[in-house]
Image 1 (cartoon, rainbow, N blue to C red):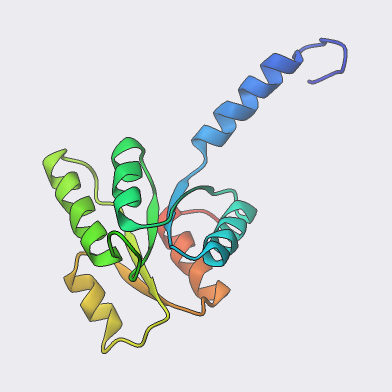
Image 2: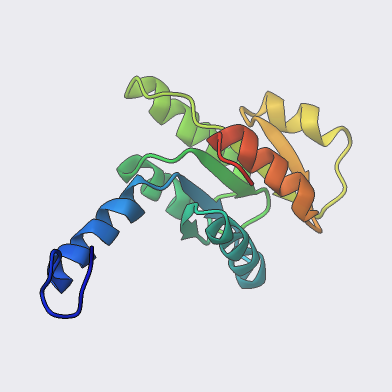
Length: 150
């Protein structure tokens, strides 16, 4: 029980418990060069108790991926520096080299593609989410990947 007067839990103890709780939340890596898309996805994920880390390009995403464990990666296909296809290839190489578990990578794009799911799966991705993003589709993907109730 928390009280204002250093009762059962003092303020530092309470903050420590909150930090532990935040660390135990499933993590989503959001990779998109568009600020609005990153903000939208972060807000949706946060509303369902998912912790988010963001990257603005594929190279940054690979760097972050090597340092942390994620339940799922939401990867834009067209970005500066390194696109989503190349970043996914680097992630898959890292998983093999380090004997890591397979992390689902879901491609996102607003550009029309011929058979996008097949194209993305051949590139090592696990699914495709078209833009504009339909929230119900995103929630289905997150629920499947993280086994959480949305």
